[in-house]
Length: 341
Image (cartoon, rainbow, N blue to C red):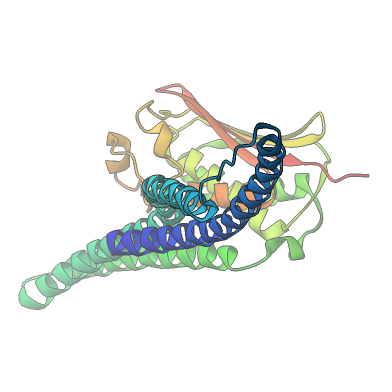
């Protein structure tokens, strides 16, 4: 599809450029031809007067060459030169048109590929739990010897898969809503210590299950933003820290001032992120294939949490940075502009 569009756009650019070249060449030919004619005629007039003066003195008569022949010759040379120029311009324009068309279509092609990949990833992520649910349900219907306890386990498993799909669709809806909404219109003065405190409270139950302590230290800082979305972004980071931390460990949640910016840091002492995974952790649906993701009860999610958090931070004109060491832990820094006095 894009090859056809590239060809059409290239031809359109080329036709436009050549049209302009031919138009200005025609104007240049007409103007130059007129100037050549006028200049030659005036020159011959001056030559005839001078020669006539010389003729009287020398008693000779010199007849100048025909001005029409000279004008036609000069016009022909000019026309040939313009033809060569337009041929050369056509070659340059062809290369330039292709480069311009390719550059113009690159963002569209990238967006199209991203959308296709996104659709494929969503389909795959939905197909996996649905297949698992279908298989377990079919087994439960076919096997009459299953006990009530085994049937309850199957129902629990199906509910877990439904929860996973619900989380997936909720995150997709959040991303879609944020992409199609001018979030800055909803910005208000918010207290950053309140944001991190609520985010911590939202994750206490998950932390307690692994006996993880979330240490909170928050300075009283104010920024312009959307409170609900920032709470969600910080909650995502804390949730990730809990998932990838060892039992009986700690997580540090800090909100502090640094020059004219507010810093939110979520630091865990878990297994960390490998160098090969680091460039992709903010890509949608990217999940590192590590042994920790296969631990019982450790749901690695769908790879939408960090991209969503990064999207929210960037909507607040902030940045997010990650540093990590394998088997030592991960630190994620959110930098946001402080509210101006």
